[in-house]
Image (cartoon, rainbow, N blue to C red; front, side, top):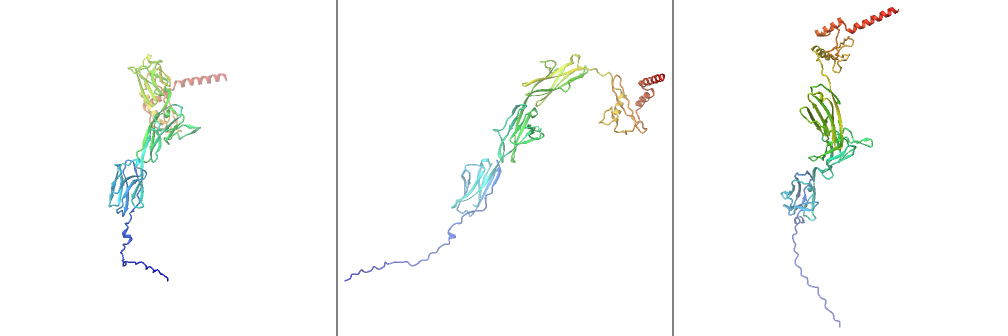
Length: 440
């Protein structure tokens, strides 16, 4: 007998009637992401001015925009709130769309990138750059101060400046004189007439006293204001003395002035004296006036109401720490003129000076204002006890101007009477003919 096991029936399955559910479109379930409407414009300002960086966002919705300093990663603002403690930074916003970062009194440290960031996933951002222009500033460290150098040595002046953009350095003298830089290996360094020189370093070869003075180092980079530094170059050298007139004649009873010019640095002690270690001091009889200009000195001695004892040798002395020198002037007496020119002589001198061009002397034979074919007559005018000869020009043409009555009278008298020297010549000529006739 076969035993069979009944098969299990399949499990009962219960099912619910099919129910259709309504599904919303995907674009209505996901919020649209914000986008930047335009890039951030880069800004360039000078220090001390105000700057603005604008970030414009479309469809910001519930998202937030923030400003971040790129270099330091510092959060400056989030949405409508200012996070940084920098009192110079503020935020201006409108319509949940425009976010303007404002920086007052911009400093050099504010230079760099500024990021406008939106907190989407992934994050969206864009960067604008702030460029800060810095006016030039001459740096004390590395720049020369006043320089003292001995004549004949080489000297170098240095000027360092900071700023953005990098400043250009220009040298010039305060008195606008040319800057001769000397020679190097037989070749001139610059044009001897150059008034300015470009570069941080100004090198002068074999400096001389002519280089003494104030030099201006001017730094400029296009951002006002330009700045300058004044550097004085002192060239040391022993005294040098020059006397224009070493022999001076003067009339007793009158005043006379003696001049002396010196050059020295450090400043020299200058004085007049008649003997060594004697200094003439200004008094009622003598006056000493000194004029100084840089390393040059002009010292003038005026002696009033000259007396016989005042004539003699006067010495000008100049001394400084590097040396000493002296020069002398011999003052001698001359006799006063014994007579004055007469009125007629003055008249003749005036006519004579008018007859010749200014470029010719009174004794010139040629008169550029007259025809060279016209005969001329020159006559000397002799004043009492003086050797003054003045040549006048007389035109024998009838069309010439009439002579003054006095002058014509003198000419007629001399023509009729002849000169004494002419009689003597005729006698000699007669004797020579007589002797010649006897011998023949």
